[in-house]
Amino acid sequence: MSSRRIYRPLLALLLLVGASALVPASAADAANPAAPDTMQSKVAACAACHGAQGQGTDNDYFPRLAGKPADYLFNQLQNFREGRRKYPPMNYLVTYLSDDYLHQIATYFSNQRPPYPTPATPTVPDSVVQRGKQIVLNGDSSKNVPACIACHGKGLTGMQPAIPGLVGLHNDYISAQLGAWRSGTRHALAPDCMHEIATRLNDADISAVAAWLSTQQAPQNPVPVPAGSLKTPLACGSEPQ
Image (cartoon, rainbow, N blue to C red; front, top):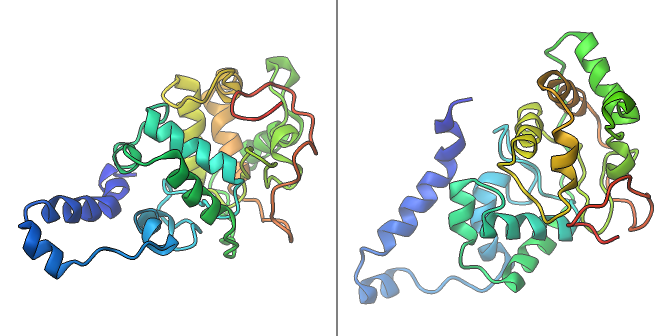
């Protein structure tokens, strides 16, 4: 996918922010009164790429936020702010936001329940899809890779308080994130369990997992399972043990 498509939605927002700095303060105040202190105003920048309810868009690289555990979303906002995740528009937008502000944004999107998109149709051979299914549901003991459902739940909806759901995500997004975990360009608090797992996967494994996950229908009640419902096979620094 062209990088132009990835950056275009936020480019207009950043240009508006920059342009406002060139207007004299008195004129700016008169023409642009202070924005109301509402959640809608606080998440306006997020909605530009992720949708008004965090439902995601048809851009493969702007994922669904709605319904994910609030602590997971908060962790990711912190990771962008602290540089553990690298995406310049996100890094820029959250640089000066407090933990309290980030918590409010995370809680808002966690409570949204927009419909899930229609799952993707496979564009790879069935053998690839089946390999992905095998890893997601059963893992690969030869590579010491646990099943994805061991942490993300049988319905792939995640677990409270900080394990995300995997349904409703695009193939390219899943593949890109697994690749980022593997290369170390995406980090989490130590122990970084996803980095450990991703380094055990090769390119074919990542493509297979992404292909199968992107074809899955959300369950009837697509909410994260309660905390402690699953005994996770690895310790994760971002998830209370």
